[in-house]
Length: 440
Image 1: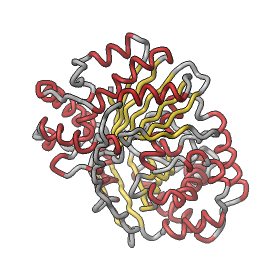
Image 2: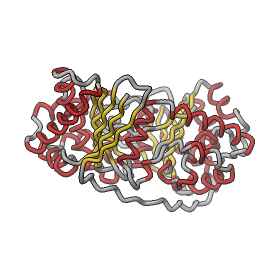
Image 3: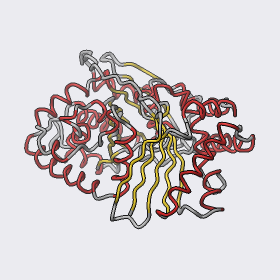
Image 4: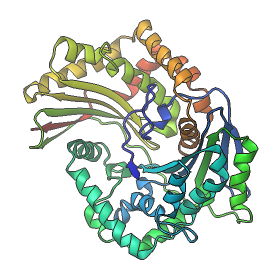
């Protein structure tokens, strides 16, 4: 039922809609309708000629808003939302959605929690209020809370058994010294074992307030009808007070090489991760040159680092470059799977590539290739109601504006070779970064 979001890359390639990189999904050409209801909820709606409707609810709370003693609460609550509301008993919501041929899912990240349903247009007026009800009026019954605690604990244990998740955790703990992004979205076992249902109900009351949400609805119904269904659900509701969110300062770039080594006996080959602290979504314009650069360096067989280290020199089995941006901080990362004897050689080669970017501009051909990719995603990457609603909700609630989504290709095309070099010189120091080496 649920999906955990692990931020990876914010770039011009449109990922699948597991909600890993919604900021990177191709933008749309026509501005949707934005409407604020009397109780403060923003509704973003658009009619498209696809015989489906997606209703997405974006709640402006994730694990970053938790304190250490309730780390994992946002994800645990995401599970409990599906246990019913004051008027929907356990299983009644899923049964209603499935009996009408629809589907539903949810995801939790550091910065947000997201719920959605996909339904036929003729069923939207009946099913949308059910989705709204379980999210806004989750009952969180004590008996189900105890049952679901065991499910979440098992999910944590499976995560700890996953080598990729363990590596991600090591990287997060190295890169983020102060920011809550260093903590796991799932939370640790000892915390989840001890949180209470009353703490969860309090967390829900605090963060699931109307003014802390954005609702996006896209499908083959008139905009007025889709907004009307949502407005009718909230008719008579008073304006709820918006919760006071925490604010954080991004951490300063590394001033030296911070090196960590870990042994993981489950691996057959070593892993190397070199990470720089860069701009987050609060400085969205600063992410664009770095996103383009990540593609130039590590997207596809002809990209610089892949061509050099894997195709030509054959000293890595796999290598990728990503620019991942969360709200308060971003990371620029080179990740490689390789033989342990080649770690030092590969690290030095990556440093040389970064140094070359300090000294020499990227080529016109490299920049043109990325612009072509953006144009293709612009045309093909946002056809389904689910994708479009995801774009709208994410940009409005997490980025703070729809405008960058609507103008994304133009914003990327405006980036120059000089902009990319300036970003490299500002953020990517070849002599200062965090490096994690995981040895088998």
